[in-house]
Length: 600
Image (cartoon, rainbow, N blue to C red):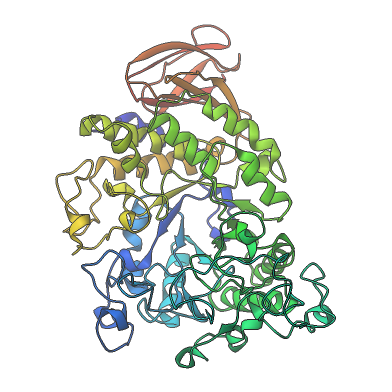
């Protein structure tokens, strides 16, 4: 599918580019590219096994298995910065790079820490991905291009190292709550008295937590001898700094105190943990001058922790000359209900969260049959965020990711009989929404190459370099006849070209990066979504129109009375208003248009 030439023509009339100093750009000025380093590019095969001897259950390396290390590294990312920049990305969200436990899981169910979420050493790069020096080289190279780097960080948990005497190693361990297993009794309310004077985790002072010395209130935790000193910094090896209550059910108190799939859940109520985590992640800012943090599993940490951690990180960033340090938390939710997300910007005081509600709205309308009024529910919720529309403007938006699966996968599942041409058109439409509506558009690596995974998690983590995973290589990609068996760094796929051109349009038009949003038309059935966005300085209008239906449409849309003529930035726009305050929009099935008003 070709990209309209009008996009290219529009660039000649684009507004002034953002400031040359990348540090001066506000979070909403970015286009983010999210990448798992292990799955991107392998520039140094010598680190594929992480310096570990043995088979895959020791090294974690097996490029033929979807759940093991494949060989991508930081040098590979540095090598491909041209490619990422050509796509139009201005910031790179780097999947976790900390040293991980190479392999974990019960016998027969092992997998590797290629994804970065099983940390043992919080101070260094995982040897499978390179070295701290490689991280410095990558960040410096990105900054030299005016690109920002956001680190994916984890505070909620570490790797699964701590075990419980009452449970078999690697097997589920039911959550034990504070009522039935209080801190002051060993192994339940009928057990012997322990931790005298400790008044509970609600009093978060050093004096109170000094009285919590025995961690056997719910289970009997222990660290296997071979892993007694595996965690860095060393204080993380002491079970007293963990909740030790068994597996979370993701509900009620277990949401912040239970082990996430067996991972050791850090007791973030303890002031020693708070100061320790501030030291750990402040050091990454000091050493590497990164530009922001994406916080994994943010909703599973007590709000009081974030109220201390976030200001400390912003202060550290300011001291390092980083005035627009962007912090956004993961609050996974799968409904169009902004209130669930917004509460974490108020109660937890997180500056921003990933906009799962946006993703859901696009899935339900473009990869589904819901009406475009889903976006009314989405945008009406912007007032609920801590700073209202100003916070909504800095929420990273996305249509798919490494956990929830790729957008194209949802389209294929929702419309199993649709031809590839229709699937491609729906994905192109989703990209247009992502790159022009409010928020900070976030592209998941591989989406621009037409990747269509088999599902979520491991099934959506395909290699960008030539893959050896059979279930990746048998997928039918969009916009191309190639497969993932060969490297995917070309720039001719219509998805790549569309993203690249719309990214240019976005970053050169302040109405699209910082402009307020007014819904002009929406429907309870598939059809037109029309939205006006306004230049924050001049007030000039840009009209966005999207057709989520399988039929062409022609419809009148309200605009400002001063918006009399229009320049086409994407799609096909009417050259002038039909009457003061009204413009007639014509769109093909799954088509879109971006129309910049002229007020003269």
